[in-house]
Length: 113
Image (cartoon, rainbow, N blue to C red; front, top):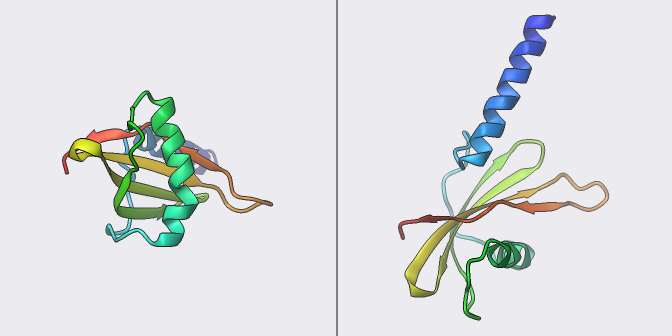
């Protein structure tokens, strides 16, 4: 029994460390972002960009692709493009709906376009 508990704890720690580094195993293949996803996540993502100190200068973010992963909710890894053709990865966690889902966004990470 203690081995199972110990293994579960180690797995949780490894997954938590992976979340911080944006390296989560099991993401789906990147696909185009649907209009429903754009409408659902835009305010959460734009707010996180502002809170992170990334100035968008009043311009909109452009969705490039999204990959998803399900683990105690859904993780959405968006690839976004801001002005001056700068690309970013941002992971948004959408909890299971009880009674409403809660959205949590991580700090955007710069990447190549």
